[in-house]
Image (cartoon, rainbow, N blue to C red; front, side):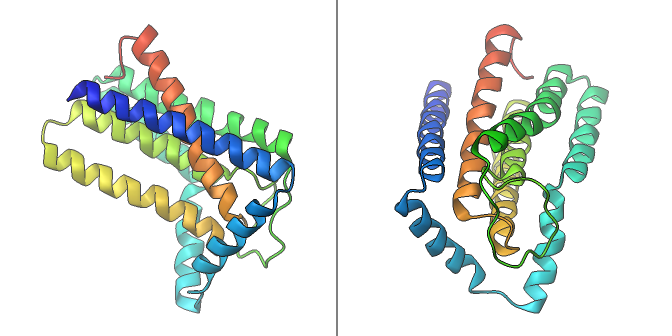
Length: 213
């Protein structure tokens, strides 16, 4: 079962890498299919715009801001340190603090995609591809899912934690499209790059650090 799980994780990482490279190519060379993809999913998300939902999305998307995620990651890392799960704490902190931001900034600088011209419901200062919020939440929540699967004993509890964190990953990405600051391809690019980075980090920890727990 463990080998099947590892195979599935590696396969997902490989597919994520392919998706990211395809999206990066499409954005860099202004492919028609990227425009079609963004239009379709952008309309699918924003068709539900309403004052109440907009208020919720504006507040919810702020959970993916750098300061919010930094505070959450450091707090969760501290808890892991206190319960003597040092490797798990380092895994989370390295992914959330040392990898998420720098990797995203580097790729953003290289791609340099302008933001959508829609009205922005929140303030943004960087370029568009890939979504930093989507990449960061994938790395941090993904790290927590891996840690939970190693530390928790109950299969039911693991499932509940995984579902809740997956909902947050999905919700943060959708919120970035809703508030008008990202194209759908930015969000998918952030998720896919985040998962690839997570897979590389996990491999390094397992190969050179004795695992994440």
